[in-house]
Image (cartoon, rainbow over all chains, first blue to last red; front, side, top):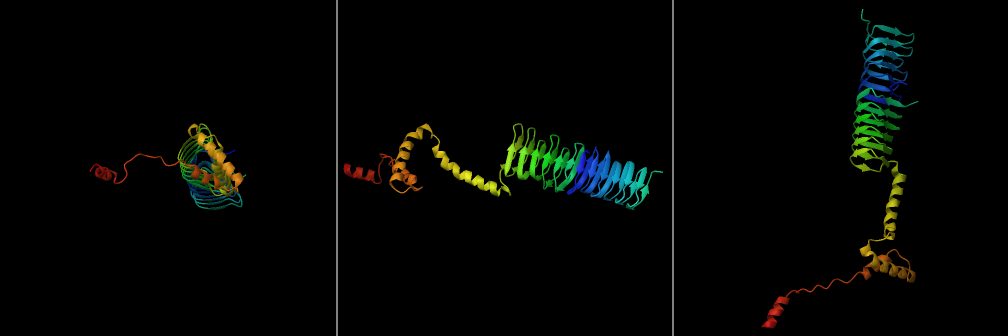
Length: 104
Length: 189
């Protein structure tokens, strides 16, 4: 199980920084930083800049996203913001609005 | 599952609120308010007020802890702040610095029971053996009171009246009354 879980119904307002896996099923507003993987569940809503080792989005993210490894935008996921990552996948059915910087 | 966990390696600077249960194993610098069970683990730390239904704390909290059902401090818990809940439990080895109040919203039933207990206690208290110095006159008094109750209608006020009647007369203190000195002077003249 993931180290940190922001469950459905829970909302965090402020900075969340972690050294472990973070799963967001609830709401987060502010800033999210992790040195491990971050995943946003289908019920997750993030209004924050996110920086992580890797990021998987199945919910909604509004904010700039930076990943050391990769960003996966899954079907049903919605991302509004710029992406900075060396690898990016956008699944069929995902919504995305923003710039991509793949460090080339 | 609707449980949230703030893991060991996680620090939140800000407020956390919502529904469902929450387990804090990391650090939160801000207020925490959930409408469910809340657990602060051994290495968990909260710097802010903590609100929940059933709060179990084994970690550190710097702020007020308010549970609508219960607040339980386990061994190793460190709380600097007030504890408020209908049920408050503090285990040996838990540290508290603050006020503790056992009341709250759903305590209505519990509070009523508490009041009943508070009423019952003073009644029960005189039945306990009184301190040695006072025991003898009290025994007499109680025996008298019992007779009285048997004779007349048993009223709750009876023991009180008896107590008033049986009170020892005011001590006779030899002293010079008002104008005694003048009288004395006159007599000498």
